[in-house]
Length: 408
Ligand SMILES: *Cc1c(COP(=O)(O)O)cnc(C)c1O
Image 1 (cartoon, rainbow, N blue to C red):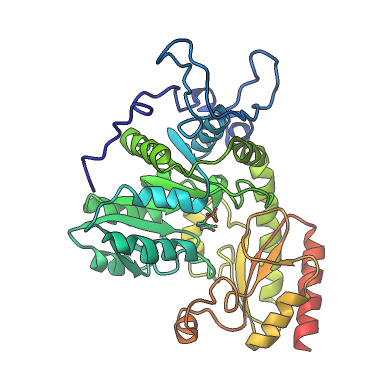
Image 2 (tube, protein in one colour):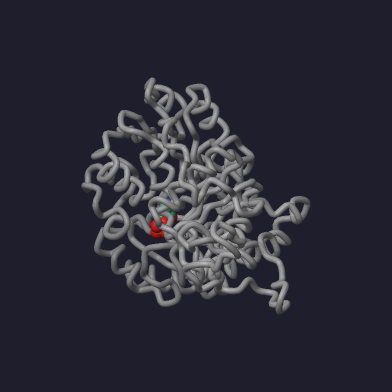
């Protein structure tokens, strides 16, 4: 990791505002999600943070700004979101980006040619593509290993390992990785441990409490929550890391516009309510699927039978709204099943209020060669669902009748 690319941009070396919203440090999650980062507008009393649709800010004199000079560098609507997200992760600092990929890219910007990264072998496909097809060209190297196996991670360490990239739960088999154990392994070698917390959200899991250095989010999923915005974020307690993230945020420029920030802020206000219902619906569907004669396996960490259940019970406050299950069915029958649902929409992505269904073999994981895919447990009959917050009996009725249509 380079020492010489510390921030020197004059636009960024002074921090215009206290990042942490200390007013809500003692409040509970539900209160922070609504209030952190946001105060009624002083002039008008507007309770919602305005969408500051402005590129520049008038200065009181040359070099005398009021904390903002240019909206790539900083925008008050973005600041409200960044402070809100930091509070939700129990962190000091937050930075918002134009997408989840832009936030992951920013963590990789910390590295320099020759550095080595260890990542889970089932990380998000876009993360795998960014690492292999973009950053390998910049002479970074990557090892993809089973991060549920501490020994495999230790064996992959090299003197030049600078980053351990972890997701938990993972996609689509919902494997649970031990954040504390992995952070310890990284720290033994002075490497950073970054956790992509998109699937769990800070309502269910706060990786910094388990020793991670950085948390990355796709705001596009549960935090936005309504399938109407794309965004990303990085959260950390380390002021030096945050400053470097700010430097790259400003230098690279993949920042979210204020309207996107406003939408995510609106989303986080109801995150606890939505997540409670996502979790409850998912638990009920997992149990019913588990009892269905045409379903061979259910991958949901809330089930006792899930290999990560005990760890998830310790590390998470509940088990989330994502699950996969295997049908006793061919590729074509499974394709027919995912096309036959009515309430569940056939789509990639996840985390919105509406339920989504997809077939990894032909959709999210289609780029993996068939043999490799089968070895990884991604069978032709595998189905992934993002359980929404509709009435659970409508969701169950939909799955049951689609199974009947496709398999009988
Ligand atoms: C969607 C997703 C991303 C990428 O986020 P975008 O907002 O689509 O760029 C990264 N990680 C995980 C786990 C995701 O689900």
